[in-house]
Length: 259
Image (cartoon, rainbow, N blue to C red):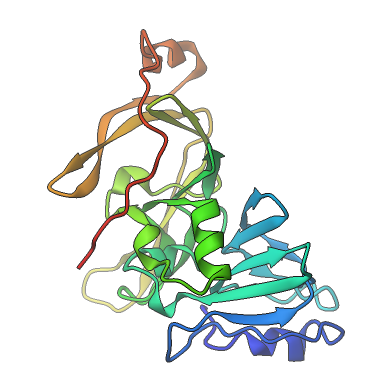
């Protein structure tokens, strides 16, 4: 279950690490602590730019009690290895859909020309009230995010989001970007289904091993949408998903006003 105070991680798990994580905050403040040591993690997305490292999502492990369930990370962390400082960005003020997705695990993600792409992942959906695979694709400029945080400027308008598209609901997949095309290979979808006439949830799981998904993005009325979507189910027909030319598009990420 998604935590509501990540301070408990250090009390229960990593006694030797003296740091304060925030998780949920009543302000949009950027928090900091000295040092760049964080607890062992699994399932996070990592992006590097210069002497900085951005960590999105993942779970914190309790190395002393490996049989216990790991705890979701619900802050974005920026590690400054030159100044030996860690910046903490509480997700409570991130854009809708991004906040839940960035507190998940096992994304399909990649980085090109300093732009980060995070697709799917598995975690707790606050609106639905259960864990599920996120049908979300988020894009942001890594260096611009870092510069904004370090200079204590607004950074929440840097995120572009494709939301609520079930074709993007993939966890544990591999993401590659070639020109304007995104290719997603392997992965799974895990989705709870409410049983009729009861309050019970049944978990449905689809295995995408050996499957390739190809798509591009287009802007429609100010929002990004999936375009040219295609699925190839076996390696024998992968060539069907390959375009004749890998058309190009500008690498820069446009700011998106979600008001």
